[in-house]
Amino acid sequence: MTLGSARPATRIRRSLTRGFPKPEYFAALQDSNEYFIGPDVPGVEPIPDAGFKDSDNKIKKQAARFRVYAFDKDSKPLGEIKRQDYSMKWTVHVCNKKAAWLNLRGRYEKETWQLRNESVQGWPLGMDPNYEYTNTRNKLIIDSGEQLIESGKDHSVALVGEFQGSLVSPIQVQLGELRTDESGRLLVLASDGQSFSVNGAQELNSQYDNADWVDKMCDGSIRITVGSHSQPRLEFKSRNKATIIMAPPRFASGIHCATSLYELIEDIYERPRRGDGYDVGEVEYYRDIYPLFKRSYLLSWTNNYALGGHGSDSMDYFNNPDLSDPDANGSARRAVFTRIRAPVIDGDKENERLRDQQAKPYFMPLLSGDGALTYATPGERNTWASLTQLQYDRLKKWSQGSFTARRPGTFFESTEKVALERELSDMTRSALEWSIGAPLYPGIEVDWASQSSEMYNPEARFRHAGTVMPGDLTKGLSLPWQSDFNLCDKDWCELFAGMSRGKD
Image 1: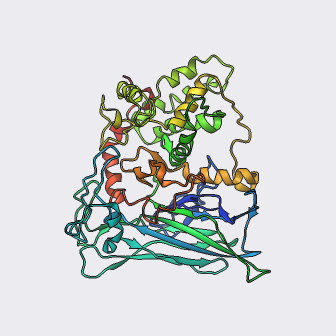
Image 2: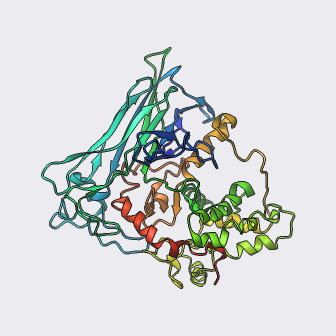
Image 3: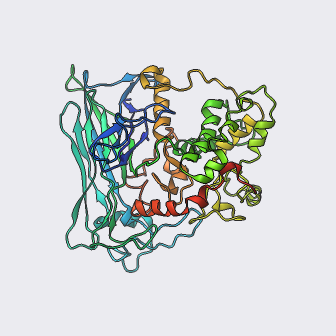
């Protein structure tokens, strides 16, 4: 899976053996026709020229840019393929399956099999409920079909599908747009982010499941065919697919969650390695530890409770030089680690007992978890967020003084300044580190199904399994996305109060 995402301001991403380095990318929904390119290197979120708004105060889209690379027979990267020497045909297929899916349930809740829009193509008489049936509810699925765009063509291609719902006839809904740049790279732009009811001025009557409502989030796959200008009959198809997600806007640029989608997927691929004698490997402070601390105090720009715990008056806490010095007295590191809530280990009774004891505001992160409809509840472990097991294990090793701190060369401004092998891995991280990996109730870019190892290809890191179809990553999210954002706005104080320095 190569990941990419576009947002209403949009974001996306790329990879090729011909392969995609970014298995996944995001494009962000926004209402402006102007756009900027999403991140290419870790730790650097682009700031568009003249700011994030256009002259009409509309928010610019964040476009997802996909590149294609050649590899030798041993999978060693040879370099990026560009249209000056090759032709490139990009094929993109996205779907919005939200209206055809089931009513929201959390990770720890029993399936109710209650359909969204149950009066339209509901359960056939006598059928045992099953997930596969939802893929046949074509009146409720916005499907762009496969759309082709070629490098060097000065035009755009719209990603358009139909939605009928309870209407007599379907209407068209645009989910996004395809373009290419001067090098033949694919640009994916999300739609305008507007949501609406096809049944007149119908109010939102649910926080998550609203009948006859349409939003323009979607996800899908990207494939590429490369041809040689010198040998016109010679064509190569990519051996893998990239993933594109059209995600909601990011209204607070530069603000991260405690666990990113990159860290969630990284942990999933780490799970098979755990067992007797397991070691988490090298821990690098400025790569693995400091970014988590930085996220804590950046939240202070969006919330007064976070401001009190990790705001401008407390930033020196995480800038303590002892935290980045493996030879320093470890008391400061241990003091931080004792406040970290244990990760979720499914089926481990000892882990459950420990998390029961830690289900209170004293522990970090102070966020609601996958089992919380709204608030984190003292004593109820699944309503509190935890870091991934990999994040936790790295923090533990850091607290013991077993880490390095090589700040020089950790961050780069562009891919051109990075060695090729690192360039490819950095693209994957850069596309995913700005997206939310936890908690997922229901999620922002993807829903909690993305926590399952069955969603990923075990033979290719950061790539989705072949069973994951267009629309599957976003179908379990709130419909429309605005209703979930509104809920978070109302409950923000409860979710973020105090952060790591809150009192017991």
